[in-house]
Image 1 (cartoon, helix red, strand yellow):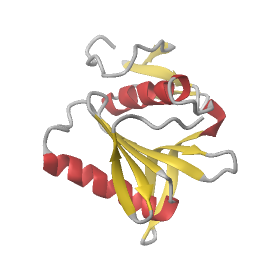
Image 2: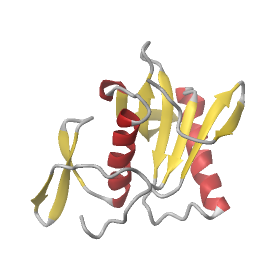
Image 3: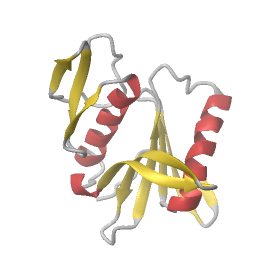
Image 4: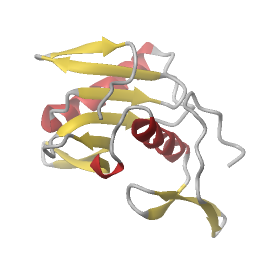
Length: 153
């Protein structure tokens, strides 16, 4: 885990183990060990931040939320449900090496998230590579940039 970069999130504690030359980390949402990839490193930090700083109950978080677009199965990285079990927040996590300083890259990730959200209909969208974060609120039919993560709990 030492090769993974420091992210722009508070530090977290991970339960980790080695298996066949792979590092596995415990995912408290799925209650299972998963392979620690750079994207998973970001997801673990985001989920912890959503619960500890944004007020999302752990039980309201779904990872790899299924989304069918034109009969093609896709998966949103993280979806937070509201108290009525409707999607409230959709987050797309990218690996830290994905350049979020490049406007075209951010536009591509935003397009992916909004395609998913056309089906999911969450109020908030978050794009993160762990270093840089973009938060949006869907107001009417427009995505309005937010200055910080939403308070959702």
